Image (cartoon, rainbow, N blue to C red; front, side, top):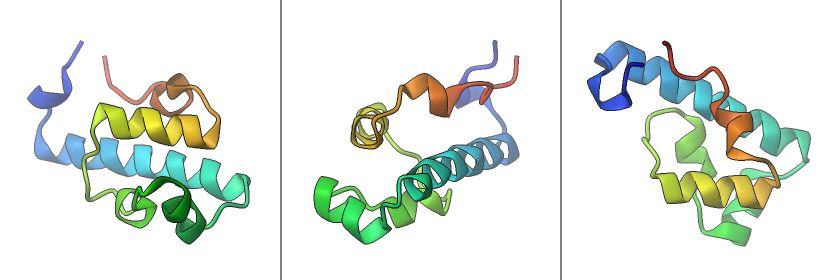
Amino acid sequence: MLTFHLMDEELKKRTLLLLASRIKNVRVSKNITQEIAYNDTGIHFGRIEQGNRDISFTTLVKICSYLEIEPETLLKDLFPE
C-alpha cells in the first residue's frame, strides 16, 4: 500500500480534494453552514473544504464526531493500492 507521505504532489492534491469534497457533502447534507460548524467546533471548514489544507488526524476525528459519521465514511477508497 502506498503511504500518504510517499505520494507525489499531484496525488496528494487529488486526495485532499476528494476528502474535502466528502466533508463538504456530509456537512451540506446535514444543513450545517460553515459558519455554524466553525462556531460549534472552532474548526475552519472553509479552509478544509478548499482542499488546500492537510488536516491532522485529531481534526479529522473531531469533524467525524461533529458530523456524526465514522471516519471510514470519509476515508473509504481514498488511498490507491
